Length: 130
Image 1 (cartoon, rainbow, N blue to C red):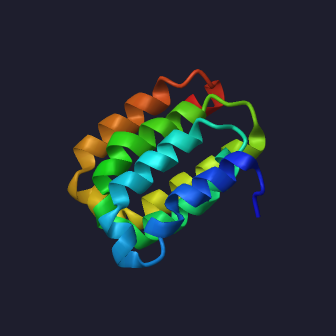
Image 2 (image 1 turned 45 degrees about the vertical axis):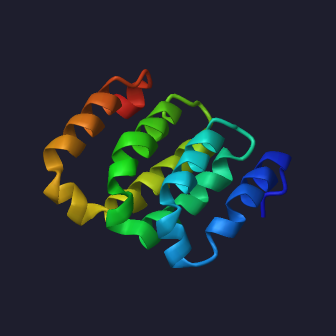
């Protein structure tokens, strides 16, 4: 359990809107905005990366557009970090996103491919480029 002050603030902000699946789906935009906002905070980034696969599993097709527009660019921005623990959680998060959003990626392959490839190859980390 993450007891950092920033994660506790994040948790308090989304607690009431994440109690049931209908609440999650109804408030998905707000939840995604909070996640993207708190991913900038290095103190709670690791924990948020670990809870995101659950959101991908629960929301599936409903989160695809926001994943492409907001989440994926933020995750790719984090790729330039040098912290191996963060990178490990980031790649796990991406793997789960690909797993749960696979059908939507197939339907919108051109959009996803252009975003994914362009962003990955523009990374300053040479290991990511390979």
